[in-house]
Image (cartoon, rainbow, N blue to C red; front, side):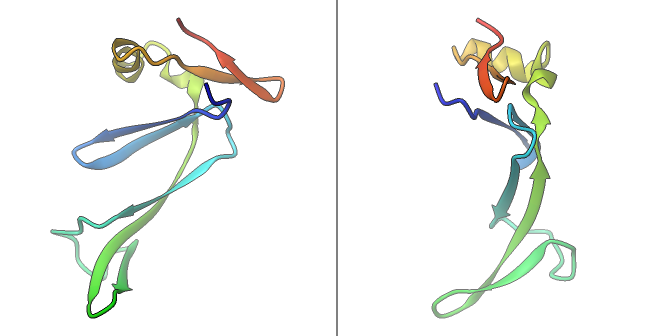
Amino acid sequence: MSPHQIVLNVSGGLVQDVFCCDPHVSLTVVDWDTEGYSPAEPGIAKVPLEHRFTSAWIGECEAIPLEKLIGSEVERALQAAGIRLTRRLAGRCRCINT
């Protein structure tokens, strides 16, 4: 198991939360599904491709401590899939659930 576990909570095709045992982790999301967005909206970038342009939404998410998952629906989903959570302790992550 990696000492730096990241859990993304996605609902409705959007990243809702980013959980990680390292509080200094940030995640940048590039979402190519910009249907319904205005090109003037914050985070929308016009991306040059080989023979055309397209749009992408670019956003940054800060990590929420992994411990905040305990008792949540996200933790129950992970447990149902047999995935164990880790947490940061003395510079390393260790298991917090079984």
